[in-house]
Image (tube, rainbow, N blue to C red; front, side):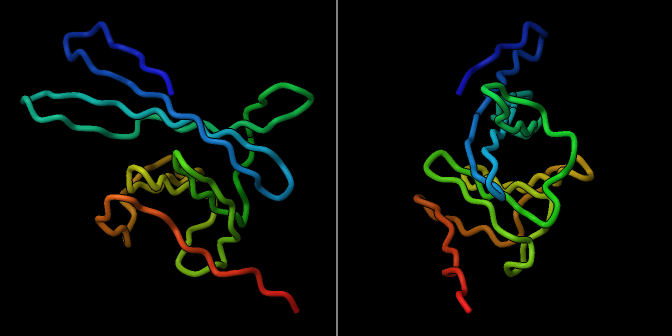
Length: 132
């Protein structure tokens, strides 16, 4: 990840995290911009931007369409793409395990995950693929 310091009076710090994930046979890179401010002495962090790129001929190309029926789960340790029909998962959404947020690519909004547990070492457990 990278850091970018804001020269404005707020002295905000923006962290840029990059995650790799395979989705429907394509390699994607998610860029997650988190801003850290301390307006009243209390640190506050929030997602200010999310971008998704697809690997194509040795270059990262911005995705112009949404994820379709897929949802991405990304973290510093692992990433996974799942069909949105897999339980209580929103389609066209990116779940950030490390921050407990979900970003909706259609509406370009970020909100807390409804079912996040407060555990030091968070992970997601996915059911095995059904083979018929």
